[in-house]
Each structure stands twice: as structure tokens, then as C-alpha cells.
Picture 1: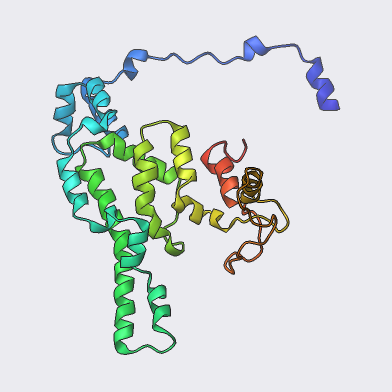
Picture 2: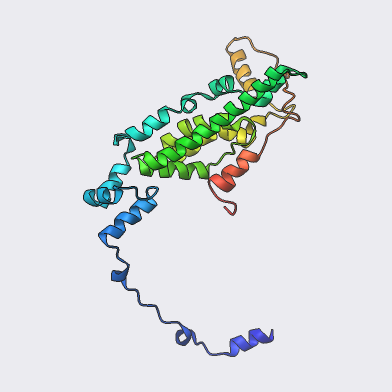
Length: 274
């Protein structure tokens, strides 16, 4: 209370106490042409490669940026040749799991007793499983170094980090290739809404954030129950409403898993304070 009275008794001195505005030399902040070239290559690319500075200088920064914003019109022979040599990158998640199964799956198929050949097969499976992730890492580095579509690669890298998934979680590595190929890369320079929707429906994100475990609580109406009711009104055969669906032992207690919903709000869109 004493401090408040003291403050109220002091004369207003805001104008006198105001610090002078610092003088800003706008001219000193302007970049030279070469500085602009290096700045744009550091921000919109993975840095300047041999010959890049000269190429961008001859094109002009604005034209180079406009070209990078249309990656489909840029020939990218070197990067495409490297990526094409990595066979696992073009395979679907199903094909990857069938041709390069996780070692624990192979071990389970061998049974409780394993021969020397069985053990060797498990080791080969572990090596092939690591290859799936290794080829993705090789492709990432190769594109960053060799691709002429530098801005697209920067944005793919950015969005992969924003919508991150963890390759070390179960079979997640088998989903990441299609995740980048079908969800991230086609929308890296598009609208955020389209990208968000593609990520939300991707098996990689749904598995990583446990949304595949979501199941309707016991006794609650299911979407297919409502569909059955509509079919019944049209005279189409229906099953008994509320009859239990086959229950997977992997799900445990039935109910909705909140992980994806929480991260959708806290990390992907609004932020933790949003």
C-alpha cells in the first residue's frame, strides 16, 4: 500500500523518461547482389553448391525463386537417377513388410527352437529391415545435395519435421516411405489444409500416434449400425443392431485414443497455448 501511495504521489514523467528512438540506417541494411544470392541459397536451398552462386546471379534472385516454386518444370536427372537405384523407396508398405519382414516376425515363424540356418535367416531379416530405413536416409541426403529442386526439398524436410513420426516405433519404418511419397511431398508447396488432411489419413501418423487403437466403447452406437439402419429402411438385409464386432486382443480395453487429437491441436496447428 505504501508503494502504491508513493507511486501515485509522483508527478507524471513519462515523456522525460522515454528513451530516444535509435536511428536506423536503412541503407546499411541493404544487401549487395552477391549477398542476396548467398542469402537466398542459404534460406531456400541447402546452401550453395559449386556453380550455384554464378547460376543464380546470372538468372537473378527473383527469377530463381519463381522457378523453384514450380519444381515439376525443373529437370532433376541426377537426383532421380540416385533415388531410382534405391529399390525400397518405390515399394508400398505391404510389399516392404512381405519382402523385408521385421526380424521378430521371422523369429516367431521359426518357433521356439531354431536351427543355425533359422538364426542366419533372422539375422538376414534384421539386415534387410535396416535397409528399408537406410535407403530412405540415403535418398534424403542425395536429394539435398544433388536435386535441382532445392526449395521443394527444403520444404519436404521442414514438413517432415513438423509432422514428425518415429522410425523406431514398431513397424513405423515400413510406413515412412509412402508417408513422404503420398502425404508430404505432393503437398510440400501446396496449401496447409491439404497437407494436414493428407497427414491425418496417413498410416504412418495413425500408427505413430496410436489412432489405430481407437475403437468404439462398448454399448455405444457405431457408424456401421447407423448404415445398417438406413439399409434396413430400404429393405436391405442388416445385422442385429448392437451385436458385437470381432474383438482384437491387441486393442485391450475399447475406447478412443486421444494421442492424435491432442497432437493435432498442440503441435500440428494451434500450439500448446492455443
